[in-house]
Amino acid sequence: MDLGNLDPATLRLVVQMHLDDLNALGETVSRKGKGRAGEKPDFDVAIEGYRDELLRASQLLSDEVISQSIARAVIQDAGALQALEAEEQRAASDREMALQLSGMKNLSKSTAFRPSTPAVDEETLRRLEALWITPDTAASFGQAESSTWASTRKPEGLGQNTKKRECVACNDLYYSFDMVSSSGCAHNYCRECIESLFRSAMLDETLFPPRCCGNQLLLETCRYILPPALVGQFQAKKIEFETPNRTYCNIPTCSTFVPPQAIKGNIATCVRCRATTCTICKKAAHANTDCPDDPSTQELINLAETEGWQRCHSCSAFVELDRGCYHITCRCGGQFCYLCGDPWKTCSCPQWEETRLLDRANDIVNRGAGAARLPAWQRANLVEQERQNQIINHECQHERWSSLQGRHRCDECHHTLPNYIYECRQCRIMACRRCRYNRL
Image 1 (tube, rainbow, N blue to C red):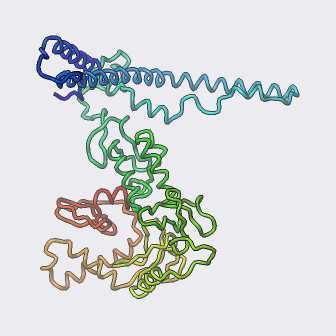
Image 2 (image 1 turned 90 degrees about the vertical axis):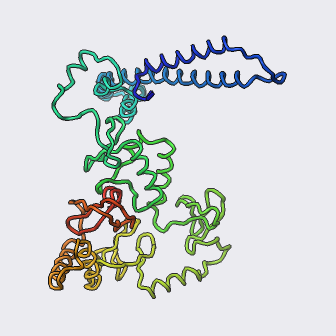
Image 3 (image 1 turned 90 degrees about the horizontal axis):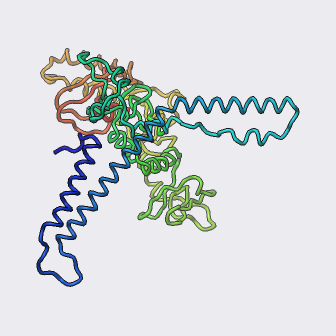
């Protein structure tokens, strides 16, 4: 039996019936048998444990009813509360002006009673909406409709389901109070998917900040649906990801990020283990001496020069270009030229190399079915078309997508999808669902 579809009154009745049956069972069943002195039989322990669970469930149901009643009262009275607050502020302003005109200078008493924050703010209302059974969902939860609610319902047969919305990540339907919406593209995310996205953004910097279709999902608009612990962890991770040239504790078993507030000069003090780290070489702090050359870091720099790698000007991470143009977007968000390392479009370097563009064009042509059987002249024409397309769309914003059936590999995260993948119609980049909506 699925108890999730029952209304609170029925659930309370079910719990009460279980309690009655349990009390009757304890009175009628004989509990005679062998047992140690001073110890309760297993039967008694089981009954007490089950009774405790039922009482906790009953208390939770009662608390839910009270919470929904409070939420309903506040939401219904929100307009009146805001009107009273506005009237009080106008009265305070009029009194202050009257005192100024009368020449009185001490206005502390006249302004002491003025509210510093709104009586009902937007976040509070959204949290209450998550508790309150709204008119659109009242019938689904088994509650009786009032005449006011019934008059606002649309007649059946219109062919539109206005009760639930689709989550763009999992494609399931949820009530609007259990979802958040992106302000730019109006895509909706359910509670589990938005929490998963925020957790993934803390682990994968390419997903930070959380966004949908290039539009940032602000923590302020999502925090009412996220666990409080996750909100605190995300705020701490936000400081880390937004810090250039980060320093981490040099102790391998710790490796905690050291915030800028814990750095004095070139010495960073770990907030967890109190170890000190040099912000230049990222090793243990040097006592009263300048930072010596770091052999391992110098060895990595020499290898990067040999291999032709470039270093991000923002976070100092090394980047290797395989194919495509010289426009690099680092995982930290920094954009720079792969040839010289300067911020993008601040140098006079060429923006692409013909060999790399041809490699990319050949990869795109090879996606087509029967590409290996094409005549040489026809294949050469297709490669040239894709080469020109890469030049035109090398700074593509990925606004138009199509779906490719079959097994494909994502160009961003390199995961292989067995059934289908998205392809940008302009630059022909292939992306999985997560990369299309939340990474690109």
